[in-house]
Amino acid sequence: MKALVYHGPADVRVERKRDPEIEHPNDVILRVTTAAICGSDLHLYRGLIPDTRVGTTFGHEFVGIVEEVGPSVRRLERGDRVVVPFPIACGSCFYCQRDLFAQCENTNPNSELTCGVFGYSHTTGGYDGGQAEYVRVPFADVGPMKLPEEVSDLDAVMLADVFPTGYQAAEMGEIKPGETVAVFGCGPVGLFAMKSALLMGAGRVIAIDHVPERLEFAREWGCSDTVNFAEVDDVVGTLKEMTDGRGPDVCIDAVGLEADGSALHEFLGRVLMLQAGAANVIGYCIDAVRKGGNVVIIGVYGPPWNLVPIGTAMNKNLTLRMGQCNVHRYMPHLLEHIQAGRVSPGAIVTHRFPLDAAPHAYRLFAGKLDGCRKAVLEM
Ligand code: NAD
Ligand code: ZN
Ligand code: ZN
Image 1: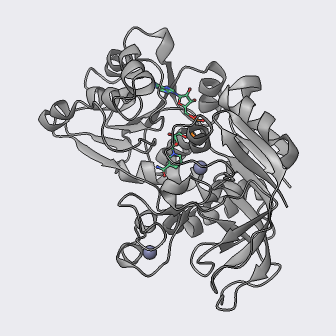
Image 2: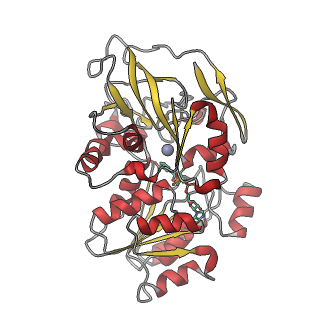
Image 3: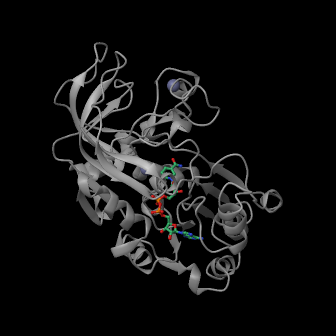
């Protein structure tokens, strides 16, 4: 088959590779029809995730048709069209029973951190991803969700990660009707956090970024206010001024370890690597949110630690919530939102390419060139 293959930082190629095979009775082999490139893939692409091996295929957001079925699979048959959640979960362990699918203890048992993830290095189990013609999907009776015919691939592929992830961020914010929510980052995850905050009754959603076309789209997407952090002296002060001096009720970090805007954090985290990436957005959230407010970290940080103003958080009586998305928990409910016409998640996609053009797609998305906000590969 043809697949995207990692060769080193900023070097991905489309090459021929062995077709995946059934390795366990509960596997299926999927013929991928659409695979998206995620902001999380950029951390891999830039060589920031440990144990990303040459030869790995990325891709944890994909939709496809079941091609081959393992002997113990009960819920799927050949020809079914499905979307697959990015965390690989067994469905029956201590954590899966508690709906914490992203912490499944059977799919990445050598690590204390998170579960197996498709196409996300050997630190998350070394599973090959779906930016390929075919992919092996373990625990096929647990993860994949069958798709109704009327739901397009473009809408459905957003259910594999970014829509549930943004939704979980808003849910963790415990937004009360009419509250003000500030979302840092207008990438796909931030956009779905904003949309979900509005669905959950937020009165005002403030979007923060420094890419003008992303801020413009956030306004079209329903945000009442936007802040370009590169155009203000102090993003925290600006947010306070916009909210009667107190600060937003909820602040969401949808940026993660590659945040711009702080020379100190960039130098310590991205150049010297003395902390796990740049953690300035967590600091902005803690400083800006009102006292007693909620801070949500949905952007990705590597272990083990970062410079975060935890004493400020303690003294302001804040609630901090964070984590990988337990996608399985949200997919059926969010499919209902799509079917009811309340959200068209595919609308965030700006670029569609054939698999052969994947290296070009990575370059555009990584460089935020040509207005690229979300790119998908269509096989
Ligand atoms: P993205 O790279 O498209 O978007 C990030 C945005 O943040 C960009 O528009 C960038 O300009 C903006 N940004 C940079 N510095 C900023 C700052 N100081 N303040 C405000 N905005 C700033 O990525 P994405 O696909 O939207 O993903 C966002 C984050 O969420 C990534 O870290 C990704 O790895 C993570 N993620 C987490 C989960 C999870 O389960 N927790 C799942 C998917 C993605
Ligand atoms: Zn993703
Ligand atoms: Zn499990």
